Length: 99
Image 1 (cartoon, rainbow, N blue to C red):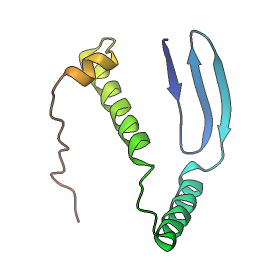
Image 2: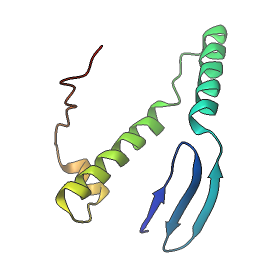
Image 3: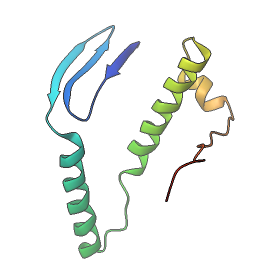
Image 4: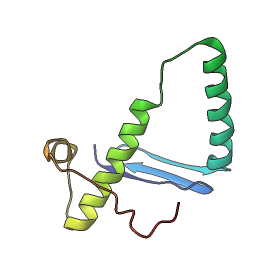
């Protein structure tokens, strides 16, 4: 399947592929997400639940960003297999950031 996603914290959301199209509206992903995450974290602590269901989606999200960055830098289509087999170390350049 080939496609792309155009998403934002606020406003329009668009997902398109060869098979389907989705258009929607995101009211306030950042604020709503923070509220849900804090409530989930609080409930987990109170219930002694040590699972972390956010790991897999977080990894996928980061890999998606790396895939997009790699495709942009190399100015070509990049596949998941290429990213997963690249054995590339990606480091953030935090020079100049203030704590």
